[in-house]
Length: 361
Length: 241
Image 1 (cartoon, rainbow over the protein chains, first blue to last red):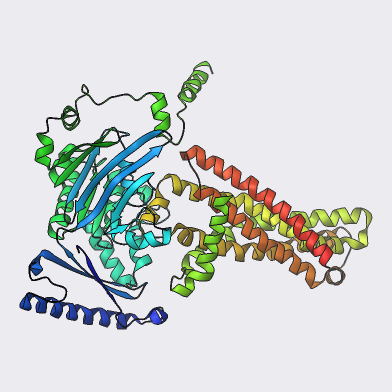
Image 2: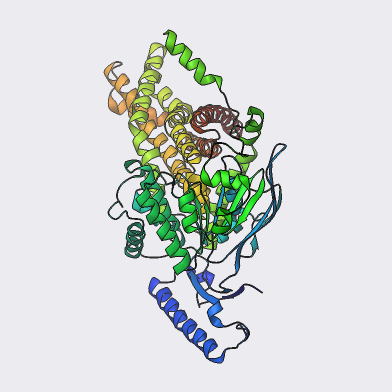
């Protein structure tokens, strides 16, 4: 058993959850923290117990707990430090006759930073969307935290999504909210924290990404790189166990790229957060990755540690990591192939007609 | 159609069932939407309703001088009030909702909400739906008053009615059922307008072009559905009375 879940009640039954005063919740959480401390101390002392196998030292476990106010349940997760967080098995995704993902399998372990790389249109973002449950595969399975998510209904998958954060390529900030409100959104929706507490957390997260004092600006008043950093702060608002990032450093200057990389390293190494990063930025990828996967032709072309990838004899890998124009990776896809890949059919003559019209008027 | 039915079922779940499972919708966003959908549409509604009241009174004055107040009251309460104000709300608020949600869809904001475990129907559609359900009938009542005021202006200044006579005549000609039937219509119209607009916005595909097409489609579909439903409801009220 790689993951052991103890589900119990902290005295807050669902029927009274709505009216439970915040102070009672706070004191209950405190009490359970003390209980957990004693519990873990007891385990250490005895080196054995109903939950701790004598063969496995307690340091191999990461003791996590969370008090889910919405569902009023107290959750204790005890999982080995190297537990498998993501399991992708034989994943197939077809658009028409073309398989963008064709039987992909890999695992991501706790505390790892997996970088997924590959040429444009190779299926990186499609892969990511399957892992966050936004897309359903044609075949195969994706397990997150031990739960199969491909067959889950929308309301079921929300429970899993509370445990991970996602940084979108564009930041995907809500344009109608301020920067501060965007970062606060997961907290206001999923916790019963007071406005003061939320404000403090928001300030902390924004400080973490170097955007102190930007709380009151709207997304259209900040640059693209700043939006991405706000998106990162929002993804980290609930202190997730797992972070998905889609091109986290594109559009950032080299200094801010280094800051984001350092932050990722700090989170993964210091707090045992797991990260899955889709990136084209090879400097950043080699800096943060503990393992790398290169996708191509719908399958995994290469997989290994950064050093293994760097020294890979595969010409596609070498072409990609050194950014060479010449090599086995095709630069152009035919319009037929492109049509299969896109939801919207390309219309190459629209622009030409427009230019022609302008020239003669 | 499948998406539209799913949206309606999802709405019913979030409004009627979810609160009993501890998942309450927030009140603040509903008031914000009420201001956008209702309060900011009030000047436009007032101008339209006043023009209609004036026109109706003048039309009545042409042949039936003494029936000016009757025609204004009955036509406004039963038909013109709910329908015209719904048309204005479709053009102003319905299209804006479709465009806003459509833009959110193409800019990945809705996907971001889903990934944050925030249900887009609960977070985006429920406030707009409840706001529309409150504000369209409220705007209809407001528009009725302004229309009657327009009729009064014509009857008093052009036809030499006195104010007391106009009010008495208006009160005699209409009964409370006329008002209720108009209110029932406006509640149904509100449901139709906001669900069609939200559905169009949430199902946008293909960037800016898709947003434009969805906005146009939402206005056309909402108008047609509203007019057909108006005929159906008028028929029901006619045969039930």
